[in-house]
Image (cartoon, rainbow, N blue to C red; front, side):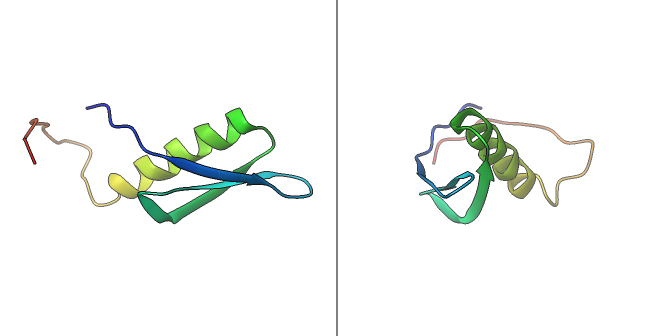
Length: 63
C-alpha cells in the first residue's frame, strides 16, 4: 500500500522541523530536508504499526 501525505516543514536555527498535516501528532526533525522526510516516514510507520504483531496479513480494502 502506497499512500501520499502532506508534510509541512520549516527551518529552525539548526534543524528542519516538520509534521504530517494528516497526522499532526507526528512531528520530527532532520539536519536536511531529505533526513526530515525519512524521519517523518519512519515516525509514521512506527505509529501505524505500533500494536501490530510480527506476523500479520495485508488485504487492500476500499474506504
